[in-house]
Image (cartoon, rainbow, N blue to C red; front, top):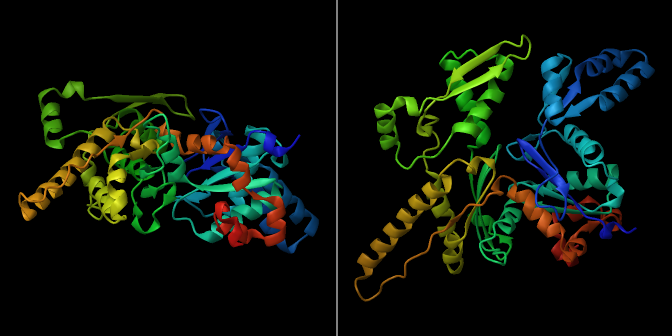
Length: 418
C-alpha cells in the first residue's frame, strides 16, 4: 500500500504543548506537554566512566537513550523520582535541544500515534521566525532517523488562517494573532503567503503570564507545594483569567461586591496527600512589566499599516486568533473594540484633513474567534494534509537523497528553484 494513500501524520510542536494526530480528523489525537524526562543516573554513569571501561560507558549511553519519558508522564516521573531531569526542547518557539527533540518525536510516533513513519507522509509546523538551518535539522532527523517518505514543514500562522473559517470557503488573506506558550506573533498573510516584512513579534507569551501568577502567589505566601506551584499557576490562568473592558470599572465592581470575585483553588500535596487551598488573585496585567508598554491592538494596527496598501482592508476584515492564550473570555471583543477605535480615529483625522471633498470609506474591522482556536494550527494542518495537492508539494525521500537537507530551506511549491 502506497504511503500517499494513507492519512498523513500532523504534528504541531509548540513551546508548551504538542498536538498530534492524523490528517482528516477534526481534533488532534493527543495534546501533551512538550517536555522530555531523561534518567540522570545513566548520564552521570556515562560521564564517570568516560576514562574507564568503554563497554560500561557505551552501555550507560545506550540506557540513557532508552530510559526517557515525554509529556505528562515525564512530569509525573520527575515529581516522583529525583533521578529524572526535565528538558524543554523548544524555547520561545525555537528548537534549542535537538537530541531531546528527536527523542520526543520518537515517542510521539511509536508510543502515542503507534504508526510506522515509513508508511506515512509527515506535516510538521514551525514558528514564523525560524532560521533556515532549523529546517535542515528537522529534515535530517525525519529522513535519516525515521526514514519518512515525504515531509512538509508549514508555517504555523498560515495553518491557523486556514482553520479560521468565516464563510463556506477558506479566506487565505488575513492577520493571525498567535499567542502561544512561548511567543506572540502578529503575522499578515496575503493569498496564503506571509508578508514577512510586516510581521511583528511580542516577547510576552502564555508562559510569562503563568510565571507572573506563580510569582504573585509566592509573594502572597500561599501554601502551595513548590513542586506544584507552576502547575497551579497554569490552572489558575486557564480556569479564571479573563479580559475586562475597563479595569477601573472592574475594580469598582470588586469594591462593591468582593464576594462575587473571590475564587479558591484546592489541590492535594503529591508527597503527603494533604489537601491545600489558595485564593485566586485579581490583577491588572499592566503591572507585569514596564518594558513592553505597546498594547496588542496598536501592534496589530502597525502590522497592517506596514503591509501593501491594496491588502489592508482585507487584512482588517479577517483578524484570526490562534493559540491557547487567546482563549481568555472577551479577549476577541476587547481586541476588536480597541482596534476599531484606532482605525476610526485615523479615518476621522483623514477626513478632517482633506475636507468635505474627499471622504474615506469606513474600514471594517473583524476579529474572528472560533471554538478550535486553541489547536487551530493543528486543524489547519489536518485540512491541508487532506488535500491531494499536499502529497505533490511535499519534499520526498528521493529528493533528499539527491539534493541533501538544503531542500527544506525552500517552499516545496517552488521545487523548480533547486
